[in-house]
Length: 141
Image (cartoon, rainbow, N blue to C red; front, side, top):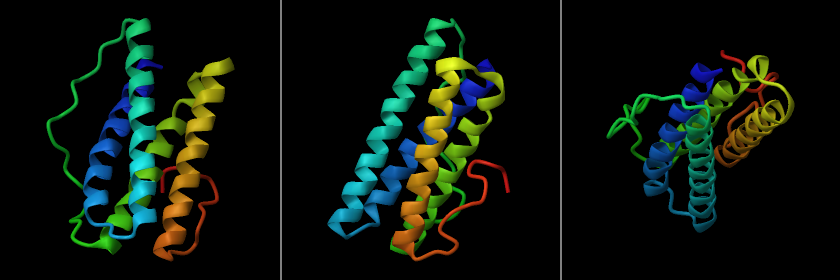
């Protein structure tokens, strides 16, 4: 389970970085507000994961000073595409925790997977991308 928690932490940290890039390219106040709310949620989860890993005395690699984005982000369209990509990726890391958790930990993992899938759907709707949802959120392509 430690590996999966470390992967979730890395995904949450990458999401925080990505939302900093995303926000710069959004002009609509509602979209900027949504991006800020998403970033804050990923920061909250990151902090929870750090505490959780500390409680089980597991160490992880330090977060890199910068991240390589999967593609160049130059405008609103590419920023929205990145938001979808980030949330889909975060959902994948939380999905990986489902088989190795139980009880409250499994409920949390499923909740976080669902939250990321819903955020990805909202970003798809804003970007006017179809289909809006994935048949099995978090399942690798």
